[in-house]
Length: 203
Image (cartoon, rainbow, N blue to C red; front, side, top):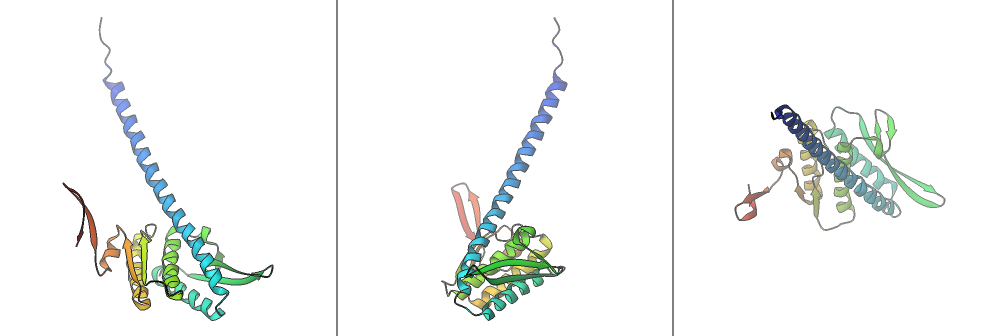
């Protein structure tokens, strides 16, 4: 009795398993990106509420200063786009309201109709403004704030955030895997695996 040659079937099975593993890895990476963007949007919603409370005790001039600062940042970073930020104050049913929108090429868009990179930059700038206006402790923790930002915008974004932080007197502690961020840092700490475990070293 002869034994059938299964080599071709085994080869096809190996390829199928490899494709499955590749798809799993891709799906895991995509889900991580979605989760990160959801975190940015959630914080943007919290900042929106903080700004709403701020409007109740500040003049419209403060809103304009906020718009000017964030717009300046967006236009400096997204140099090839016509983009602006608007915090809009209004009263609805006797209660003060604050809404945020972006104006791109003259067209108003809500935050869910712009890219993740724009959201990340705006969120970081608003948090800097939050620390300054509320006279909070001059330290800001950011975890991969620009992970969704296109590579061509990273140098400008890193430089602008540094300039604003310096102007406001805020120390920014940032977790990032982007070289442009570390290039603009005063101190860079790197986590490395060693035979004895994880070590953090200054580079």
